[in-house]
Length: 197
Image 1 (cartoon, helix red, strand yellow):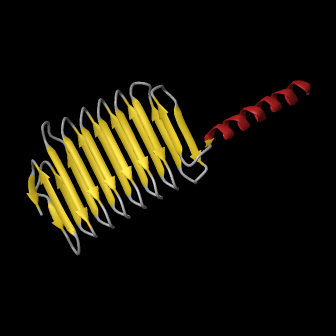
Image 2: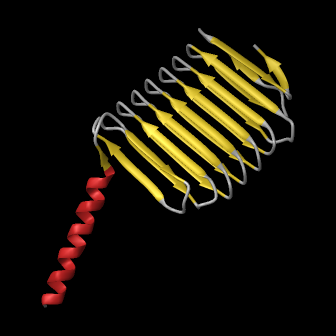
């Protein structure tokens, strides 16, 4: 019985230490790892971050003022996610891919890079930006003021750069004709698959 009570005390201390480590002092939350661990933190301002790696690459995530940032890395990838102002940013990378996601003022940014690809997404003002690079290619997307921008590449040497503002929609790939719907804003795609806007 005494042993059980002692073990319960140890478990309680460990749980309390873990919980206190998750809540960071100051304005925001910063997570980073290069080892096979998951680093999670919650900021005093309501922001949160998560950085996960299998130990073969670097994962970094930071959030402020209610933002949420997450990064996931496997097989030699490198990811960075930054979120502020209630924005949501997620960056994933595998097999030597490099991904960067930035989101602010309720924007949403998602990126995924694989097999040596590079992907970057930036979202502001409730915009939605997504970029994927599955191969040795480059994809970037920028969306602001409730706009949507998607950029996806798969072919070696391919590229896609999509930009949209003020409710516009820009969707591009490196293998097909892009789509630009400016609406009341702007939409532009420049890619090895074609241009619009």
